[in-house]
Length: 305
Image (cartoon, rainbow, N blue to C red; front, top):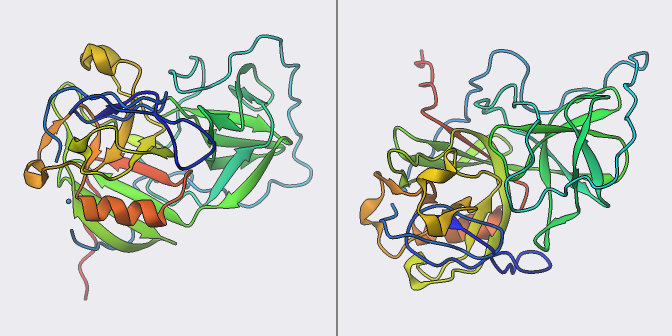
């Protein structure tokens, strides 16, 4: 289901209210829903990284003698990244399907410029909140004097931030969603805690692949969500024109449903549905900023001797 302008009990202000039955979450703060069916359990081994190059978690600090690209002046009138789709021009996530846990989050303490590269062009501002909800974005990697983070309100995009104007926090959790087996697994410190079957996006509105994160939470706007709060994610539909008109501008959501019979099927507008008990568990344990990665399927673990 998609969500659209909600009201948050998570942070300081409204987050959204949904209006229908499908499967994507909009955090512009008003959950919208079309009319389709939503759809959750076995622990798994820690997720093997699907990337062979740089890991997806910050590494050690760069050498002291590495030159620091200068942050260019910030022009007046830059757009602020909010619940609407982020401005274009930001670089692609170099490892969107890397399941290596991202263990550090970054929270702006004032509006800060987001660049397309270290020393590159400032394209937008990241504010401390989006729609009144405190923003925490996972850190992807670092270079001298610069930090790359997953971009909110965009799919598989990163932004580069210069030093200053933000604080960091430890991210202990990770959520991995596998599209082929229709499975969600929750990890803590790289170890599987629990796993549940899920319902995912239908053909033409598939749940977007790649790394994203929990943007915030909102109360359920309708009984179809089973009376359980909803997580709005940083991801948006890959093809916004494919979703029902009432869901345009929505974000992908992680939520429960009044009926578990569609679990294991592709029936949503892109959202991730799971059981009410599983959603309550995640709401109790998983904070804003927690990374979530959607892959087709994790590699099978090597056979034991």
